[in-house]
Length: 314
Image 1: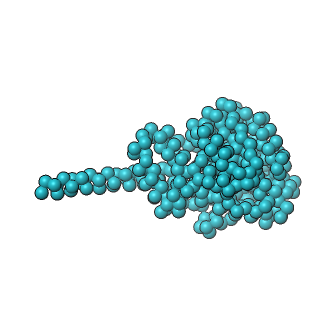
Image 2: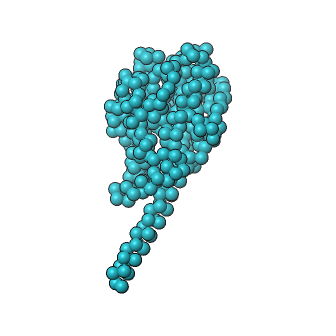
Image 3: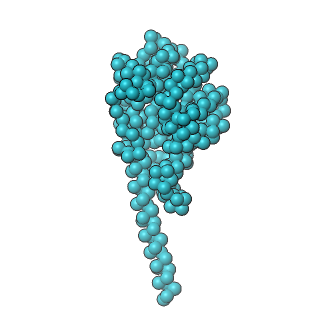
C-alpha cells in the first residue's frame, strides 16, 4: 500500500509539473510568435527627428512617391502589402526585409541607400506585420516562401532582364539567408544580411536567457515545448528554421554585416552563418554597433561596403 501511494505521489508531481510546463510553453509562444506590442522591441514611429543620424535617408523615403503592391502569401492564406519605389526604369531591384515586429517603413534608410545605387525598391510587410495579414510570426522560415513569390512578381512586373538583390535586417536578415537556400530564379544575383540569427531555436534560447535570465534546466524543456506548439500552430519545429542549413545550399554572393556590440542577436552568430555560405562572400563586423544599428553607427562606411560588394556581382 505504501509503495502504491509513493508512486501515485510521484505521478501526481510529474502531472503537475507537466501542466505547468505546457502552460508556460503556451505563454512563451504567445510572447514570441503571436503579433502584438512587445516590451522588448522599440515602438515604431514615422516621426523623423533631425538628431537621427539617418535623418536625410528617412526624410527622403517619406517624401518619395510610392506604388502599392499586393499579393497573396505563398500558402494562399493572407493578403500581403508592399511599397514599391521605381528608379528610372532600372532593371535592378532590391527586396528589403524588415525585422521582428517592425514594418516596411523601418527600412526607410535602406530604401534610400539602394535607390541611390540605382535600384528599384520593393518593401514588403512580412505576414502578421504592418499592413499585411497573418496570424503568427514565422521568424523567416515561413516568410521565405513569400519572398520567393515577391521575387517572381518583380520579374513579372520588370521583365526577364531583372537583376534582383534581397537584403534584410535582423529577422529580415534571417529571412534573407533562409531564402538563399531556396530554388530561386537566375535573376537573383546577390544577398545582403545585417545581423541575422543562426536559427530560430538558437535565437529563442538566447532570448530566454537574456530577457528572462532563465537557467539551462527550465530553458531546455520550455523551448522544446514551445517548439512543439510552434510545429502544431505554425508548421515547423524551431530547430528546422535554420539560416545555417539554408546557407549551405546557397552559391550566390552574400555580404554579412553584424555589429560587434550586438547582444540581441549575439555577434558570434555571424561567424557561423558566414562559414556556412558556399558562394562568394564578405564579412564586415561593425565597430561599436548594437543590434540593427550598423548603418546608423557608421553611415558612410555602410554605404561604401554595400556599394562596393554589389558592384562586383550585380
